[in-house]
Length: 266
Image (cartoon, rainbow, N blue to C red; front, side, top):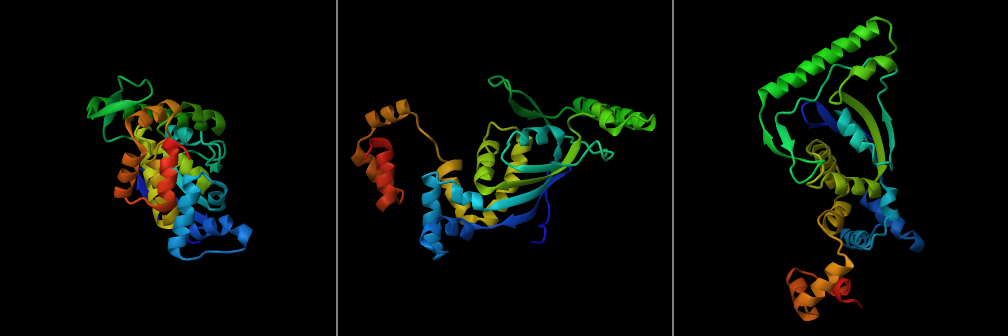
């Protein structure tokens, strides 16, 4: 396929879809392979994909693969690479001289009081931005000086800060890509990587709309209840009251029965 236009992210980054193997039809075909049947109507396909998602039948979603070209700050890339279910190839600082491109945020965030690894409350600080830019300039001058003195590229790069931009190709199947998005679209994820996750989400909404709809319904905006939480719900609800509430929201048939069984059992 022809590479899609890049989606700008942050001040100098982007996400670009390079290639795609399969779509909603591939998920359906994989699920129906036992019966030798391919895609049917859109409504039937949507119902099947929804069933697969809510019952966590993940292998059909692995039949769809996306490959992205990403430009992101090093600290974002290092978070990204913690997801070890993809094939990745990053620009090499041993082979190439790295570009003088740094992420400079429009605003800073304060350290969160209730979460040691999170931030909160955007604020402007010109002096803080000046400090950041000063470090960037000094670090890149040192990098160039080391290269000019004959220091190997693989060693000279040690002086560069984590807001330096890097580029990489990222290839991942849809099931694991959904897992990535579940984590990186969450409110507690770092703001910068959430910006990249939102860009990828927009691509998936367009490319696999039926799968995305099921993912939003059952995973992204769904929740898993513990045994204790289920016991509490049972103490507050009756099957009749819950059934009426579900019907009012449009659930019927097998979906209605499954929802009741989740809380009250078969």
